Length: 508
Image (cartoon, rainbow, N blue to C red; front, top):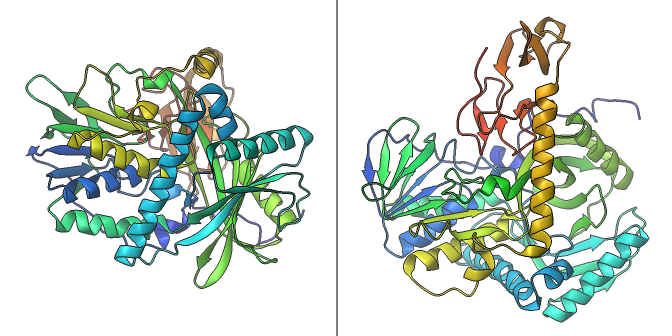
């Protein structure tokens, strides 16, 4: 395919959501504070939790290391659905039918919470009910889709089994989950943010939480030395900023996936579509300036591993061209998601030894419902109410199958990349880089990372991740340094973009 101006990717990987939402800005915390609940992380979980707790009359402070709604929530595909890939047959096999049904119910309740909120507050966020589809193209995937539909029947899920989708895609079986939804997440959450502030909740941006003090009461310690004394801490910062000896970095792994927003030759049908096979492909529409635009997503891989990340955007572009015909690519962005060992999020008390600290993480790619479900569960735990989902999501659980196998394979993979990075001897020097190019180079015999911007200025960092010492790799598509071991990400200046690392790379 010849490259034309229609197919060139926008240089700035900025999500559509942020450019089309008017977000308030908040000050940075620079004095010590006292509150009842301190929430760390300004995504859907943190904001919904704060909203619910201020309704309960609690004093709440919410802090975010960057801007609120700028992390994973700001980079979502914004599906509100309990259809999270082919998982229900797997959950029945590994967790049992009762827990599989609880997982579905928790996410359905989250969907209804969002819908009720939109209706009650008349939020203009492009909310629309849509059926969700997973289609198979191979015999092997076809068997999985059929089994998934059988799981739907066992669990009482409102669904159907069909055999085609309204695209130029040859399919076998298609499992459908009825009455799911999609929306503009930032416009929805901005209404909740406004009400948090109106009811006395406090929000502080660019406030990095680095530790927890438990010597005299409970307090969140921030990077600039300020502290927030509180009765409860909620860590909803994607990767928990505080581990509490839960060793979550050994029990989760990070994946990146990619999204294009494109004008298309063909009309985009109603519904949300997801492939059963690999590499994953996702299609749905959004409305931009009154026009239907396709969101084309997928091509996930472990963070810091695999091919040049720009190739993933190109793969999605080629898929979109084949299926819908691409007229123009308007936006591109990527997202990072955390996977737990058994694919169920960790939500609840961080460990038994920390009765006033809660976490919410590991949503895979399905944060809109899982994140909302987390907020509702955390609300009940803090208020001392029973919640039937507490045992399902408890962070202290360990399901022998498949968790043990996944634990071993995940940490063997980490060990392999740790050793591989230490043995790497780059041959390039910073002078070898072209404009707007980054890569691993050698500086005085030392492994380093260098990026040369479009003006020729070079930024060099030590490539040793500040979390556990793995060597980071260059992410061409997002212009960042990514750790292949636990998913930490750093800017060209070495600043932390994603945890679990909480210290920047050394500048050279």
